[in-house]
Length: 369
Image (cartoon, rainbow, N blue to C red):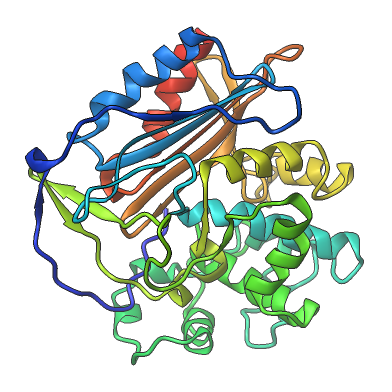
């Protein structure tokens, strides 16, 4: 999860009881020509879990499911509560730490081009970075870089926040532990990886991912998020507290950067994960590295690769990641199955407290079991 705050604004609460019908907006789409929507039983299972969440847990949500080569996308609730703008299948959300998958793949693209090696010290390319920290350790959250999002001193940085100020803050904190000795989730490490991408590619991070990933894959609705919601399809973010919905606090996206600043749709994220696993983003050797358990310096394997969580859920393997950022909750996961039975579930919510991972897990297990 990443919640980076670079400024706040006050808003009035919105009473959930004033919200309109929960009836979902429905669409079926396809990643490949000829694919049709899943059976009605799958749709019914998704609705049975998602519909009760509207009004009690989240103001709005989009769920996308790819199962046995067939794709379903369903939208529930509202994208903008104040104007009662309905959620739609192509609504754009902030995706928080799902951004890390794109950052990790971008670094591995640079490895393929021999711009760097995974065991290179980051200091070789970022002289201001801590010594003895490798790129591999940054990718796998084992570098010991101090986490800026939970440090009260970070909030005291003079505004407006800039990337230079953020990087200076991160690099001037002592390490939390010797590199490679522990695993600790680190947005700070992924910010440094974004700076690495910029310096080696001579492009800003947003331009690099647009040119190297979004454009080639046709991800037309995936982009670096603006500071404020813009456009008719952009969801607004909320926090649910005590039966009330409150607009989320304002943040500057430079405070999330390559750790969590991307926006996307459920359909684009399905397409992204499918393309990644089909080796259309990086080649097989680097994909294997991305999806393999990282190891501590003592050889202990971890339940994390590079920007990918590696888990087992009630006997099912799961490859994915959760994302949380002010006003939004997201999750994407692939459950590999024999033959053509692979299942991928994306849940995007515009309510920070929705716990999209829990919702996505319930949907997946209901479909598989």
